[in-house]
Length: 422
Image (cartoon, rainbow, N blue to C red):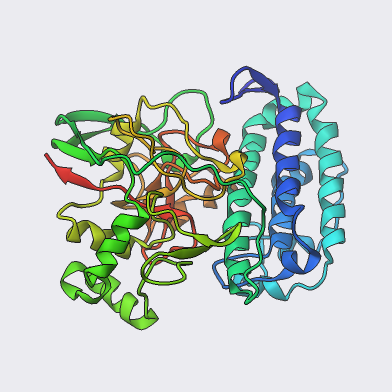
């Protein structure tokens, strides 16, 4: 990037300052419905308090943009360098992740003051195109990083409020059901060499590159995601009690944790579930959500199918328009597929588990310096998910985007579609 403007996936061109302000204000808007108490609590080690997300996303700009590049810049508070460091060992020490909920200080208002100070310095920097241009790629990384944390704020808050016996709602209203369920059809794809991975000047994370060739056998993908009603049939057929359907590690996980239904379901029949709008009847036509890779894989075996590989998914989605239910819609629940006879629900609604281990592409090289720790060091014991969810910012998504989580993770908006050999 050689100037302080960036192409917008929403059309037209945004100045870097405008994009910065848009992303940062969206983070504040997501936190606005929450009390100071809501923002301070950590419900499990995998989640983080909203207050920490607010601080960490500002820490990124202070640590990687302002401090190294603005003459005379002074840290807002040297203690924040440790408190809000996530996993960047090259930067220094970090407060232990499972103990982020113990940070009663700094207070929420102090964290918001930190954000305001960082925003002031960033606005001054971005107003000077000559100074901002060499930093544009790094700033864009910081903005995409903040969009990832916007999604994490929603998923972490959902788990937090679910742990509260009052089952309070984060948002009111917002349901936007489509007509469904649409019939499931199989969409076939021919064998051959395909191009996988990102190329071009638009932003991508380093784990989406380099673009490379992969050979795919003939395969078919289901035209839509697996629904709540279909998953309830799996449960009714004793799917959680049949070890022959499960990977060995998955069966051990199911038994050790007493899992009998997707996370947030109120009962195994799928009649009601907790969401960001509180407890509501579960729509049987909507995509099943909050399932682990183990559950998705067991269902696929039960259905006589399998999960797609990430290369199959990306090849199928390569020319698709990025449209669907995203965070900006404020629905925060996956919606039923529209019956159109084509491959649908590729983007939004739920992240789609694939059977692909999260590994580097051929020729992958992490970026130099601390930002090289962003993705590469997590390429172990995780699986790839594709497509985004109803908690993902729309402008954040593209066909090459690779999300990744351990096989047992299910507090994210994770679902799946079926695949089979053709």
